[in-house]
Each structure stands twice: as structure tokens, then as C-alpha cells.
Length: 286
View (cartoon, rainbow, N blue to C red):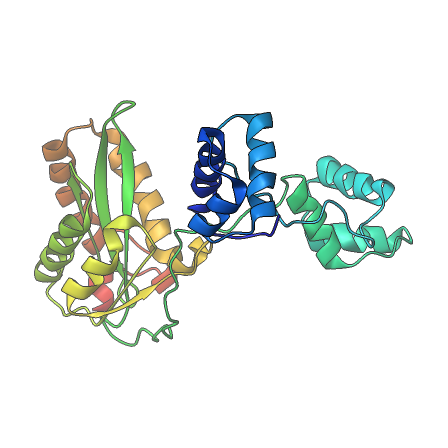
């Protein structure tokens, strides 16, 4: 049976077998559907075995390959993976040290076949690279992020945070909802409160910083690299400081959190010394 990707063919095979079952000849059905009469009889014989249901297309994938790795080598690859939890290149090098000649692609295929290879998410979208600007003045590069604060199993409070890389000036505010509209509102409010223009904003790939947010922000925007939180190191460190010195001391009430944030951000800007800016305060840098 020839391989095909036509999604309607299983249903057509069933209908052909049913027509023969109703009394049509194989040649009449072949003229009606446009297939050879021997193909129709193959479908009829198959329908008698599995029932008169849609007859699925058999895969064209070969059952074996003449150059497939031996079972001993495959077991060795899986043994190293389970024992040390190493990735493909490390396993390939260990096998090489043991005198086992096998290609890196064969190692990765074996890991994939046994379900040990992490698949790339189909939902990740490509974003063109934008060079990271050098922060020579306020607003040249501003990093933004979101803190998820758990209230219970089904409810969260979201604290948006923002930091200017040059001056370390910051802003934060709590919201009950997290979406692109909230993120846009937060950035505009932060720009008014801090009193300077944001030239470029950098964020991670969170849903609140998606395509709509970028189109509405009316500013230069760049994404951090996937799986590289160090790209947003300044705002990530500010988030930790904010949680340890402020958020952990207040209850899960948005209005109370915002009152505490207002007082803490004043202290952070005018009193707290920062090693990253030679033990100055953000106001002294400005």
C-alpha cells in the first residue's frame, strides 16, 4: 500500500470496502473512486479483519536500519545518562574515552528515542537580535520584570518592577492582574514618577511583554535570551532585594503592598547604598 499524507484517505478506504460489501464489484468501485481494482480488494480484505472503520495509513518509516547502533552501545549511552544525567556531548566524550567510536548525532538520536532529549518548545518565537546599548545616561537601558506572589493555590498578586541600569533608580507596583495592558500602564506610570525618558526597555519573554506590548510601548525594546536570566541580572537582583527587605514583611493585600513599596522605594533611592555604583545612592548618581 503506497504511503500518502492525504487525511481523507482512511475514510475513502472504508467507503470503498462498504460499497463492495453492499454488492458493487471491485472494478465498479475502482472506476467510481479512481483506484485500481486490486487496491480495492486489498482494502476489502483489510476491512474484514479490522472491521468497517476508517483504514489508517501505514507509516513509511523503516522498522530497522542496517547501520543502527548495537544494543550494547545504546545501553551504555542510557547507563551514562541515568548515572550522571549528562547531555549528549558529554556522553559522546565519555564513550570516546572508553574507546567506543560513535557519532554525536547517534548519541543524541538514542537519547531522543528513549525520551531523554529535551524538546524545543514549539511556542517559542524567534526575535531578531538587538544589540545591548551601553548605559551612559538615565533611560539608555531600563530592565523590567514581574514578581509572582502566591496568595493561595489559585490566586496570585503580581508586582511589576523596573530598574534603570545607569542610575539604579527603580520603580515597582503591585497589581491583581498580569497582562500586556497592565505592563503598559506600569511603564507609563514609572516614566512619569521617575521623571526621565526611557530610551530602551529590556524584558524577558513573559506573556505580559508580548507582541502587543512591544507595539504599544512606542520605545525601543529588546528581549533577554531564552534560558539566560543573567541578561536581566540587575532587575533580578532588585527583585530579590525587594522581596527580602519589603514584600516578605507585608500581607497579601495589593493596597498595603503598594503603600509599603512607596515608602521602601523612597529609602532605596535616597538612603540605601549600592555597591554597583561605588556605594552611592541612585539620587547621588543623578
